[in-house]
Length: 169
Image (cartoon, rainbow, N blue to C red; front, side):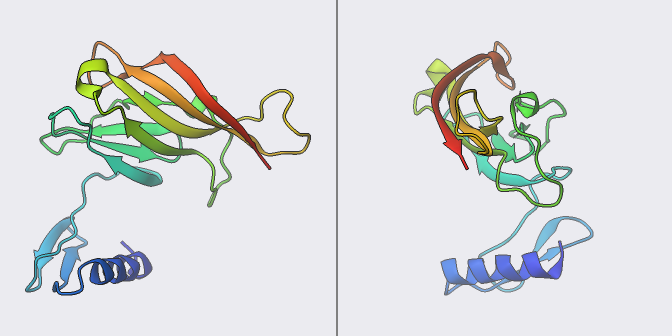
């Protein structure tokens, strides 16, 4: 981790937990080293391009789902292993992202409160501009529902149900 993100993370932690002492994250091993306090930083997964969100589903599985802006949702097992296959791959449904920086992409994930029983989840992503959108606009934001497949570590990409489309300039 470069110095700037570490500094920003430190400032966030100090702001969020004003009475807590700081910790130092070991760059070589991705583990936390306490420096006399209760707040720590620990790497959960590596090899991601631009992670923007991490969510624990309400199913008691202990898994974590990581939203990568490039269009992938990845699963970290209850044992801390990043699964090789993505939970959901939306790259073929999204706009082409600009190299280096882009505010578009796969930006949100929410699980239905009764996810354990119904397998429903919701995503927010940037799709190509839909027909009939204002000329010269950039993309169409989608909020879609998906369902989990028979494999609980995979969503069914064919189950997409579009809930809302918003054209973006």
